[in-house]
Image (cartoon, rainbow, N blue to C red; front, side):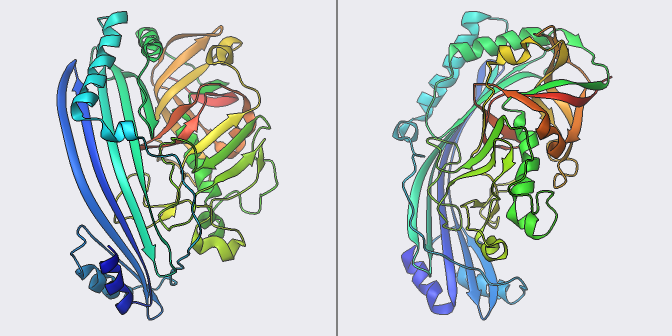
Length: 439
């Protein structure tokens, strides 16, 4: 890699070379049998340069492909964007690599998947889940002309367990997203089975305002709106409702929201982002008060704020070497002062909704904070208990109004799902008076 970089430096004014090697193993169990066990190994290179006052970029899949230099120079001739700024800041070690997980064989992953099936059989043989397990090991290395030359290893572990209806549609799902191996527990399986049985009672819900509990998983659909609002790029473009709002209350005082890139064994934890900026524990909302934005290198001078280490090669729909670094979450982490166990969250609700998953996370006016979400997996709450699965029901509103309606938070952190990835961890959250559209 350094030999290639030396050739780059000879032809460009400034440059950054990014390399990622990824080895992954995936297991799929469908209808009680192993469907597939797949493995892949990839290498990606991304070059960003400044040449004659213009920015250029190119990608490659081999260290021997020196055409990446010529292609980056050629692309710079057609760019109008400002030149890039490359930095060299000290980085710290972050616990994001698990040796046990990295060394697990395909056979061991298969054993874990079959063990999960056996847990279901030990409780109720009639419920046969689908299980997806994926393990990846990454090495990321960045070199730039400012003197930055660092790499790190990261492991990522994903488990998705889903039960289905007799018609083959999703009924209940639960997941693990972590940097280390964690066994799916019998208690988690028992909770899935309990919800699966409740789901067999289909119920309709009238339209109106009522208490709504978002599970930690479902909170990702709301936090994508807040992520857009605290994106410094959107603040600079004046399309964020949070422009000039630092120091003001934007949420209930019971809630604190962080972006924690150094979270021990967090799924997206790492020592530096894809621009080489050290990650941080950035408090975004503290007891309801807006404290910070997420800032990339290009936004530092415009906002007179330091980069927070949140520029990643990832979008809502992709995670490819071709993606340019853009502001995104590392591990969003939601905390609260009024904490209750999940059964206590719903104990005093006369009639409301508990939402486990939604459809339509990417729809609506996300920058404005608006949402209108079909409930994929949700339950009617009556007299403090889950009594049935809601059908043909939506929940809608505006996150900047509804954050004020938070009354309490749960105690168990769950991965916040967003389309194809997780954006962090959240407990269940109780909102009072959300708009529900029933059938």
